[in-house]
Length: 363
Image 1 (cartoon, rainbow, N blue to C red):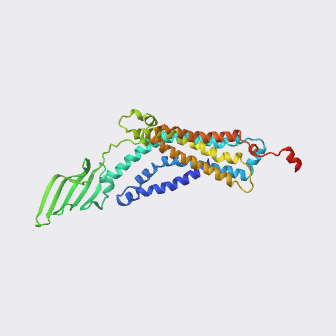
Image 2: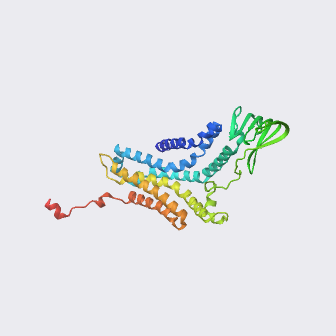
Image 3: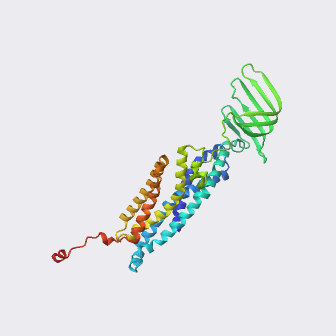
């Protein structure tokens, strides 16, 4: 278990670093708070854990059983009459525990994390007042439009506003205001200012005008998506995915994708059990070799890669043709049956060619 946690933590750390690079620009350019940055990247970890857990368990199980075989511990256990099935129970119990834990993560934790991540992502991309405007700095909202904010208030408003608008090539406009607030419309974010002054100069004839106002608005002319977004497959519950046919708003392709996603939410966690058994079965039933178990380990790794590849291939095929969905279950049950059979009934002596009596006499 310690080896599994160590491998999982190492792999997740690497993936976390690669995924966090997507948000570095938001920290440097938009002033994304570090706390929010850590929170967004952390919400990706449950999905990454479910993907990496079977591989990490396979690696750790393979290492532990190979170490036990190298130290002659498994040799002594076999000599004492302990069957390969009994030796594999430790890996099987760990695989079952992590499988059921991943089922919980897949169906409870990940939908909640995906929903929270999407809401934060929307806030980062569209909450102009807090994430685009940094206190005490000039911010280029778009070409020809610069905004300065003195302070963000606790109620969500901003104070000490200065706007320089040169989007119109014929004029230059400077607007100052005591307070304001960013609102969202169908056309995009809009800055509403109160108690301010607008100064404008015509570049053609040099005419200057000044206007005091109680209320004034500036549009940013950027399309802003509505806060309400369609719920993705990862945000839906298992019941909604398996009964996607009842949702009339979905297209046939989306129905197939949702149903496959629902079945994979059950099957993917169970690969922890499969990979744990695949890692230990070859070492338990194979013959001991003092030079090492490189051949058995290579076969186990190749088998794991084939099962993982078939899961991806069959998943894509089932999304296009739903009648191929049983192939996903076959890809799970076939390795499980082979591992159980080898642990319970396999005997290497069955494949050893026995000499006939006349051959023994001739020898």
